[in-house]
Image (cartoon, rainbow, N blue to C red; front, side):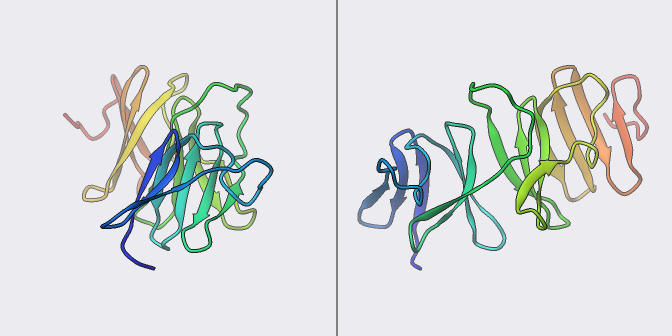
Length: 171
């Protein structure tokens, strides 16, 4: 389907080829398009799905050939209309994760086709709030930035290290 760059903008989803831009906007009363023109981020997964986050705290898959948006629910207890920063990533094990600042980690559940909480899969110390997460696939660890410091989680042995509790003596 061609070589395109996709850009998230506050004026819609932008597709750029070598010669021109095409803007995908949300026309009123069209549920098949993204829910707003305020696109926060785009992410292409290992299965060539293009994931979109929007300024109204929604996520979905945008079909880049048919220009159709399919919202994917987030099973979260968020009672705020304030925008939450979100980022997708895939683990070494092939799981699609959705990270939301402060709210933590969610995994795409294939049975319900929704993002469900995954904070128990990659924990942080009690009372700490998530700021960011990065997978170190070389050392098989997750580095988690929190409001109270840095934590490191090893999924193979379920060890969680942090200030005052550095099991692996990480620097």
